[in-house]
Length: 288
Image: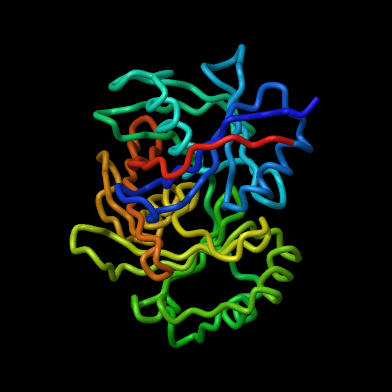
């Protein structure tokens, strides 16, 4: 007998349809891992989220790219929160927990805006294959500040600072070579960022390249923008390291998917949250 599921496509980190980062969202009870992977491949967006009943949290949450299961996905979690709120599984101004491959994540809805906890990863300076990495991204040493080190986080995302927004706009990676370097060095993704922004109230703009996970360029990446707050603190771009800080980061404008990610870090309790709005653009059924 054929299976039939209801599924939505939701644009996260935006107030406008066709902006931000699209994610598929559906309930996954009764689906095998192989079926979830096929559904994610059919949806062909960066991630598709599957929600399940859970004894450990309010829901179990899993994320699949078109190529593989992911350990963490920010925009598909924001999309899942929006999905649950829109379908009245969660009330406004209330909290919810997800059991995930990255542990139990605390999330909430505040006045219709979705908030998601992001793990606080260990950070290290990265010095291997720097010239090769720059070359695969189409960057030269003149594009970077040599006094600002590359930073790799515990989730294996590598952060690279460039001086100008125009440099960020001009990046044209060699994705085949970038994939090889990412595989050889266990780098999950390359985040290239600058302090120059489109909006004066924003703090940084970034692009995220992850052929390692089957996505050449992700439009707006919660799991990259959250740790970017920690990277900016380490590199000295954020001077006050003792008080709570909330910033807005930009991503997606350069590839026509404008997105804005709120990020808050509380050093006293070592908690990191991302936040954003979302818009449902498609509701349908899938039969297989």
